[in-house]
Length: 207
Image (cartoon, rainbow, N blue to C red):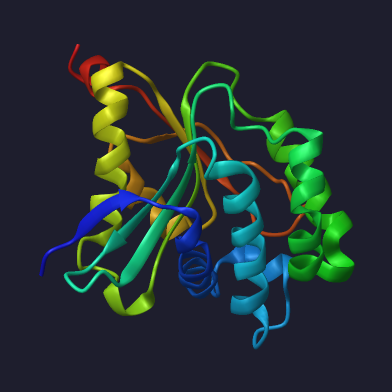
C-alpha cells in the first residue's frame, strides 16, 4: 500500500475535518467537551473545519495522508513558529464552528484553551495541534508518514516541535519520534489530563 502525504487545500476541508471528527470520537478531551457519543464525530468535525479554515491552513501547516486512490485516511494540523496562538479576529471567525461543536460547553472549552495557552512553550517551535487517522487505517503507517513529513523538515531547519498528548497510550508512540514528556497538564480542572511533549531537532539528539 502506498501512502502519499501532501499539503491540504481549501477543497479538502470537508473531508479532512470528517476524518478528524471520526478519529477523535474516542479522545478523552473531546469526549469530555462533547459528551454526546452519537453526535460527537460530526460536532468535532465542525471544530476541526473551523480551525483548519481560519487558522492552520493559511499558516501552511495542514497535511493529509492519502491512499493510492486519493482517499484521505489521516490529517495533521500544525502551526509554524510564532503562529500557534490564534488572534482574537481568527477566534471570532472560528466562533460559529466552535458553537456548533461545543454548544453549552463553549465556555468550558474556552477555559481549557486558556490554560493550554498559558502553559505553552515560548521557544520557537512547530506545534502539532491535531493528528488523527481513521480507525480502519491505524497501524498501517499513516500516522508515521504524517509525522515524518513535518519532523524531517524540523530536523533540516533545526527547529523543535511540541504537542500535547490526550491519551496516555499514545505517549510511547510519540516518544519513538523523539518527543519527550515534560510534565502533566490539568487543563480540565480534574477531568482528563494532557501530557505536553517536546522534541528537539534530530541533530541535537545526536549531538
